[in-house]
Image 1 (cartoon, rainbow, N blue to C red):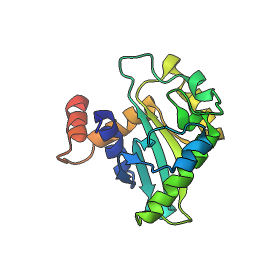
Image 2: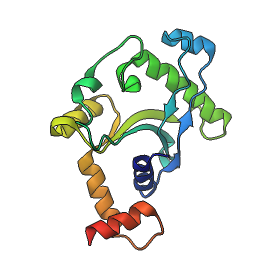
Image 3: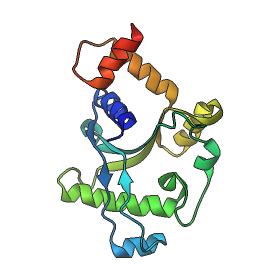
Image 4: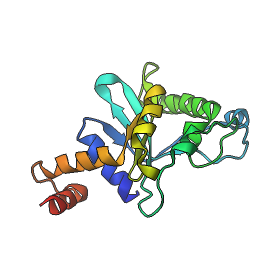
Length: 179
């Protein structure tokens, strides 16, 4: 488990989500051919966040990019017929539709979802290139996706620091840093 993913997991759990991480999607050979990449490895979702009350699953990609330029809006705006690049689920409709369809069936087979379970896409980013969080949020809102910006994450970590003691590394770290 990536430590950044662990922090996002904790934040989401404190918002009432049940978490499964990582989650590998079991594409069939025919689905791989339909995607246009017959030898693609099983897609791995960083975090599945399930909100039972809403019967909704968010497939989150967690991108820390701490010592890099960060998530680039332009890369998220790309569109590809065959999946390529860092943000395949975001930039290739056919890939996302096939992966989400198979993911729903996998969740049903595991007893973790129903045919009415809604699956959406989300991104948690600790660093955004040129501080374009609001532009990314607007793009995601237009596509009905979820976005946790660096600013959102900072706010949620600060809220965790104000909570009572819990023996959870990210909460303890937040308490240390916020004193």
